[in-house]
Length: 377
Image (cartoon, rainbow, N blue to C red; front, side, top):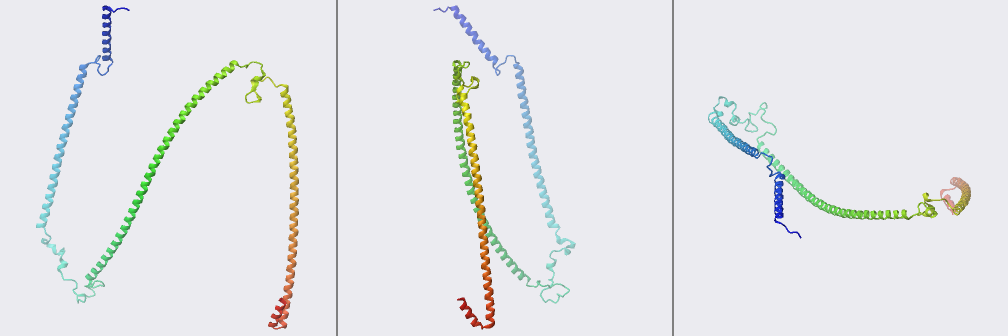
């Protein structure tokens, strides 16, 4: 074990001090906020001072403009109020002067435009049979008698009653309309509540579906990851097995068993096949002969089946023809019998008609009916 000498301690101390100074220097140099090396701090201070002075001057100028604008607004409001008061005072003075010194009665032509001239004059007629009311005066017409005021008052009362009745009907209609509007509003509110409830259910269902889809996707992703891992593992195992089979197999050997296919004993691998054996050739020829015989047998069966169907079709056609001929004979016999029956009935009717004519000409009516009844019986 080595002992530390004082000289070594001094070297270690100097080295640590130098390392500490270097770290402090790096902090000063690489700190962009506090770094002053390579920059003119006095110029920066002057620029900051000038910027502050500029901002203060601009702020003072804006405050001066604002104070001046407020003073101008106050002066403008005072002047507008003084102008409105002067206008009102002038209009009032003009109105007072006109009412006191320019009255209509002081005019010379007042009698021409006196609104009370007709009221001061005598009425056009005082009675319905006034002698002043001549025909040419046109002062008495139908409906302009002296009872006009009472009749007009009665008509006005009647119109007022009609108006009140219409007003009551209108109020009643408005009440019905308000009831209908209230009912419509209640129904609309119920529909809105129902729609809100359905919307809440739909949003809840959508959230549940989204949650289920999210869980399903998560499970599908997990299953897909696991499947990929399994497939990758299986592929690696298959690759290892293939490599092992290639290393241990007899691909280039003359072994005839290597041509056997894994899909069945009747199939071979083309790149390993060495040709068929004699037994396989004999088996193929035997199968071909069997196929020829089977094909001949099937052709014979088809020929016999076609012949059978032709025979059955001929028999069916013959039976249909015979049945049609039998029906025609039956129809002819029936028509012949019907014609014979009609002929016999016609003969009977002619004999009866002839007999009735003879009876009508030779015997009275009563004897005719008695005889006819007897013959009927």
